[in-house]
Length: 379
Image (cartoon, rainbow, N blue to C red):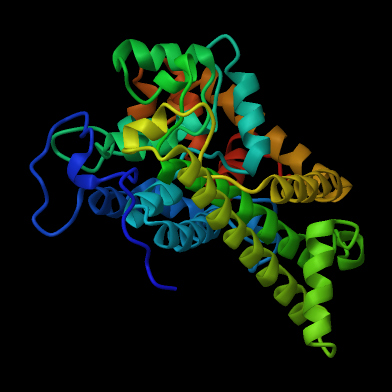
């Protein structure tokens, strides 16, 4: 597909709102390319290879991890960005960074840390991703974190509670948290990453769910979005069965959603005609969107996966064990900070230090630490 002409309302690295600590421009890379490269070389990015998406690392070598999920989001995002005339490098940077703050054991880990941190500011994985790139990475001589551009940081902060938005706004007036307090939208590139995230995890969770044996393709045929593309695959290739039929169905689902996003977004942009990126931020609702019909169908698939995969009894058993691991770890570290590495143990905000350390763990490191500290063998 021929790349579209750059949109006037796309993010422009030459007009970035800049970094928290000003730096000279790179001679060979745009500001957003530089952000992407910093993210790829970060320690937090490498850890994603051993962080759970749905299935734990030891449950199979071919299931998605946070790393492969992030790569799939980046691929979808770049494809759509190229067709719409958005900044591909910013889309890629946000996609690769959006899960850097995710805990081990997926959403189970987030829920446990949030419960442990009640009374101490709570825990939000989107905010944790921002903490990683703003503070926790230690790679540069002049600053903590990665010192990313405003636009990349804005995209990383996908959700934010009002309380945390107020705290960010107090230190960064008119910055990345303003929209959570006064309304508005992030850049089109950030909006695209939000939608590409949804498309990616719906598709790969169908694949992983069937591969695991926890859901059957026949069950999925109750979902309109799956059934339509399963039928079209068989109409064109009646000999298809098994893995090839599933893969062809998912491929067609992905293509249909990508084309729908492109068409629906072009229509929204033609109707509103935002003159620049800041005008996009003033919109009442996202301009990067599904059509109404595709939104309904995508939501139906998401609901199916929630009931039949994420709440499957076998997944719930694993989830319960994962929750016990992280609760125990938090309890040990909070009561005995000497068990933490020195750079965490020496911090005055003990509970936040515990949460930061645990959130940065891979699944397998958390399991090993739990066994070492408690003597329990849950996995």
